[in-house]
Image 1 (cartoon, rainbow, N blue to C red):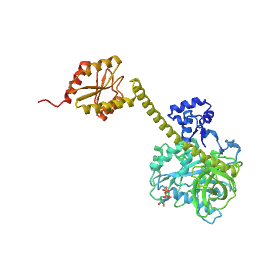
Image 2 (cartoon, protein in one colour):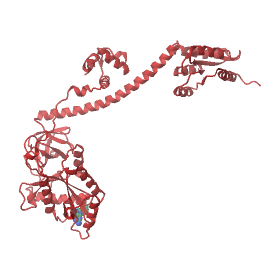
Image 3 (cartoon, rainbow, N blue to C red):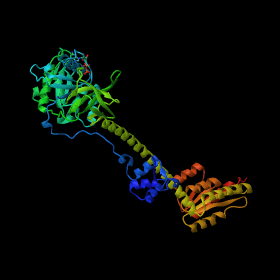
Image 4 (cartoon, rainbow, N blue to C red):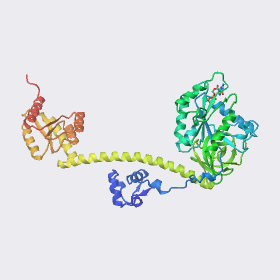
Length: 523
Ligand code: GDP
């Protein structure tokens, strides 16, 4: 709603007078400056910005949900590693993921139905006979790694391990190098495994692959370096167990742990709208356990979890750290890269999202207000220029209107009389000089043609002098004063001649020549 000038001053903690002075500076009219006047949102906002405040944002912070502070991870249980497969186009990423996913589905209970949800879990037992039956590896399978980069932008590290796929028949290519750079930037946050792919092919050149990697600073373990590698074929499904074992070993070394109790946290990997199910989002739980019926928020929307489905298509009642699940029950579509947080209650989830949306609207409003404020400043500058103009006219002892009126009358009288006149607006540095110049110039001429002084004043040539020159069809004389560049160009736009000089006899000669030019040439 609207707020009065007095109320606003109170909110800013300043005197009403002080605020009113600010309003004058901003060029706000007298009509809006009364203490009881109800200001509109634009004016109130630009005043707030003048006081470096954003009262709309500060007034009520509203409810929000934040991640819980990091607890001591060493006390938490182990969690599955999260793996992203990257590499140059056509080097076999999709095929390799398909092969791994097939493994996970074959081992599951869904009867071989492959479900693409943006991530999947591979049970170690499906590839390793002696593996811990519970252990899994989570593979992210998101197009263009949008979620990966989205989450990186928020400073969240979701990926623990990167599998760099290099086709053995092609070697290191531009995108291979990009991945290496990305991983190197991550430092210790991300582990790297090189998968030399397409090893089923007869014409492969592993030495070339190694040379290319070496040039990028990647030396494989088998050559005395520190990067593990495996030879695989996604198409022929060779070496997959080797790859999974290598990943499991790396994960063990990294000792990846997360708490399973407490509120769920995670990230949205993918979302889509399904005709039957409504909005479905794949989320990767990173901490806590997500359960059926839990109220959750993500980005600008919230959900009460209606159904959860694992990557094999099985309904699940809960999902712990490292587990990807697709979740239904959303009010709106969350975006890949949004952080998921469990809310204390459905009401709080709702009020958190209401607040986030309001906050965005406020930010938008504040941006708009900034624009309004700039416009106000422009208005202020224009007012200032007008004030200078009026002041100059006052100093000259006449109002601008009066002077204009005089100038027009002079032009009209001259037209009536038939005598040719050079009408002059005379400016000089001091009043004594003005009189001297007037005395010297007014004598010029005869009864056929002469000089008529329209206006005189002290000071530099101003815009109002040019206006007078225009109205009187006259010439502006500046003696011992300057005509600023802007005024000069205004004068030439209006076709008003401006003569500035500091030498009286030269000025007299100049004016004489102009008066003579008014007469028809003599034969
Ligand atoms: P992506 O662009 O990295 O996802 O590569 P794709 O998985 O789409 O594979 C690109 C091409 O390479 C396809 O024609 C695949 O059939 C082929 N390909 C992928 N993996 C292998 C492999 O292990 N061996 C052979 N011979 N071909 C493969």
